[in-house]
Length: 312
Ligand SMILES: Nc1ncnc2c1ncn2[C@@H]1O[C@H](COP(=O)(O)OP(=O)(O)OP(=O)(O)O)[C@@H](O)[C@H]1O
Ligand SMILES: [Mg+2]
Figure 1 (tube, rainbow, N blue to C red):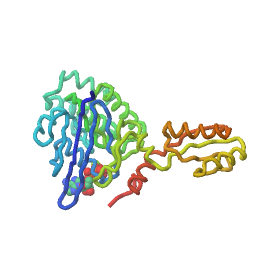
Figure 2: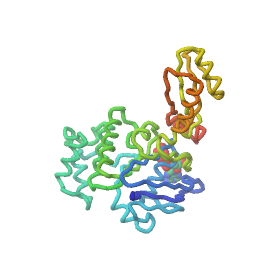
Figure 3: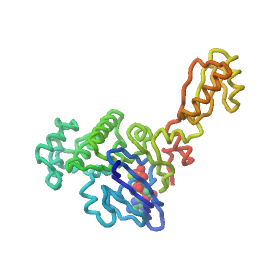
Figure 4: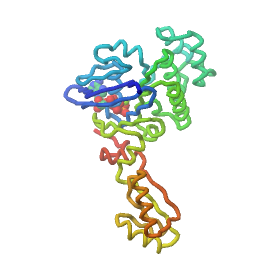
């Protein structure tokens, strides 16, 4: 049996008469990465704020680490770590001092100075440990911020856009740190605007658009929901292409290659029947590949606009 780390049902939040979250249902098994994916203003930070007790919901219920959000907020807080969208680093302190401060503030912190050294090493911040955080690059600041979250050894961590603004290398570093945490059994609730990030990291993805979850599933499940998934068959001769095009009337021809794109959900059942049909007509394809659209296509299909398109 898998334990549930986070479960929310019908979460609602309004600011004035603006409905920002309109009934969010989600479930995150312990030890997995859940990614909330959405464009600017979708409601990602609001969801994190509700689930981390920083804000009160106007409706719905949620349990985090087995505790009710509304009635056991203190227990929830003790079980979680939060790295907010904007770094909680004190600019005037050095990296080391920031970490020490967290150790002093945190009742769960084990090991005092040892944990500070350990985290500086783990996050590759030893060299800059004694420099003021104001001199850190964006990536170093994000790392220090996450290191500070880890001081209390939380089993559930909320990361609100941990890699926004980072260069590809720093992003990869952050990804590997996140993967290590999950390998240690930590549950990660991650928000991101990057489809690739959700695709790379998350066990499950929920797509948030204007306060609604428009889809949930694994990256592959989301990709498969798309009408655009297809099988590409490459042939050596146009004659073979002609023959194949006759048995798959819904397919699109590419006479130049020559190749045929056959719409398919990419599941084993439909792939088998496709291959059986080729066999039946004694048609051999030179190459056979399944093309699933990327998450950007998914976002467009689900919401009618692209993930990066500015929304009012
Ligand atoms: N305290 C607040 N008062 C009024 N409106 C708010 C408040 N906080 C958020 N909102 C509104 O709620 C909506 C969702 O905001 P939220 O910060 O949750 O989005 P987000 O998905 O985190 O966006 P981003 O990717 O830009 O961080 C926005 O329209 C925002 O203007
Ligand atoms: Mg946000």
